[in-house]
Image (tube, rainbow, N blue to C red):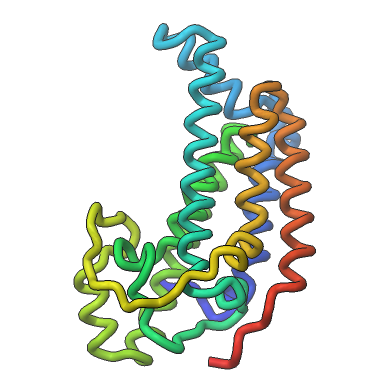
Length: 241
């Protein structure tokens, strides 16, 4: 089932609410449960199984989370460079042209996959139950958003979109391009500005992960979000579609 029109318009804030609940995990207080972070839980589990020492486990999980967040940021920047940051942030669907360039030659929804990879990364600094909650809900929401867009694109582009969708996978990227390039030019600076939150999270993990201080990393995520809200206000508005 695809997302409703309201969910699509409010998708930015729905994502925000899911992340806030994941970090906050209010049910831990209600159930009087001890608060720990996913990073700690994974380190303890890996060390207990004898796979790695406790210190090596801390580094390994930080590297995995950082790579996941970085891949997510790259996918979103790459996708936004072709579709346009103003369209990415718009509350309505747009379809001026059938996009078949950049990551859209490998998969149909690079932005949504990028968000999911980002979620895997930041889940490291959530409580375990909050991490599971966030990953599951974000994944379900990405699928529903993608499904909601497809009838719109089919109505707009007809057989051209049907042929494109038959060749290009929805979420799992193809190792090779599935359609020829349409020759669109990317706008890298605008896309990087539009995805400044994602970039900020990666910088936070790379720059401060070595402190092994989860509170510091959470503050970095919050600061990145604040900066992104400011930048978002200055992004150009898309033309009516």
